[in-house]
Amino acid sequence: MAKLVFGMMQSLDGYVAGAAGGPQLPAPGPVLHRHFNDHVRGLAGCLYGRRIYEVMRYWDEDRPEWDAIAHDFAAAWRAQPKWVVSRSLKSVGPNATLISDDVEAFVRQLKADVEGSIDVAGPELAASLTDLGLIDEYRLYLRPFVLGQGKPYFARARPPLRLIAGEAIPEDVVRLTFVPA
Image (cartoon, rainbow, N blue to C red; front, side, top):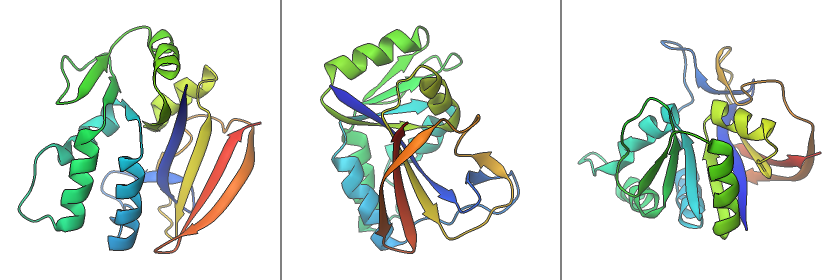
């Protein structure tokens, strides 16, 4: 049975992205990037909301300005199955499946059929799955920046959570792992 894990980098004040035109979280440096490369390589797949999937499509095609670490991440990301929840998209890219209706039934079946961890990305999708009791773990990667406003990690009120682990990650990042209380 799969475990759904909602994990994203966020600012100290709880934002995964700054307001349009405002400050944004800087890209990870090489050590943190390698950490995420290894993480993605170990996944059973990724479950995305539309907006974050469109952002992640950046990794679909190699770019000449990428270094070896970026190429490694792209290869790991491309190899993962992706499930994209969207009512507006008509198609998705390689190695991806579009989910446009009965998300709850699809995700419940996905959890039953897949072994390993499935990353959930996108605060709105995570909020919907939280409401359905489908998120098994929350990983908050806190970075030492304050954005002041933007898109919060928790799209709605924070659910009751219990801390099960805390770990320092390279480049001044702290990963806090919670499970539903």
